Length: 170
Image 1 (cartoon, rainbow, N blue to C red):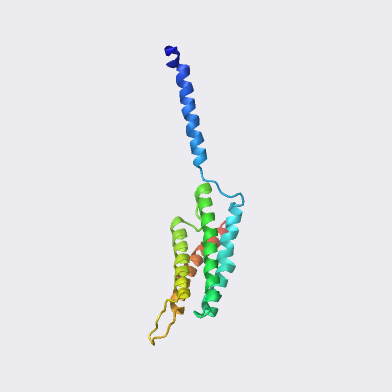
Image 2: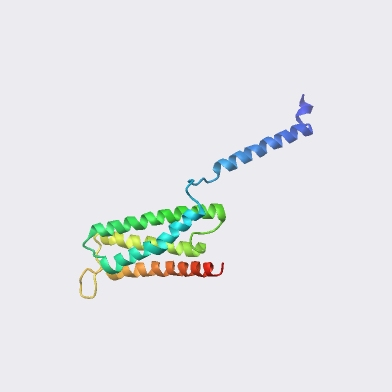
């Protein structure tokens, strides 16, 4: 019996057993994504954020932002957090399935997510009562919020320009 354990057939069976364990452990640790995530869905999430989302955000920051109205600030924070979550989910999906990023490149994607987070954080500070004193001593957070928004808008605009150029040459 001891000799049959060392036979070539036994070695092949052990190798196949180890291989099947390896395959099983690899497939069980593979990241799964919700079925609604597709390239088309993710493109629509980006288009909505780049288009109407940024226009709405720009209108709020440039025309309606008032540090006294905490509800508007809260709604804007929720908007940014939700869009960031959706964009991040799509980015993870695209990286895992296509080895691509939601915004042109890994650096562009990280820069845009960082700009969203910085604007969100600044709005959270204003909402929690942090004061931004101007030269006259008045609380005036608007320039700080506008600066954060402008950074985000420039990064998103750069991405949008690349998309338009790409479509032009297809």
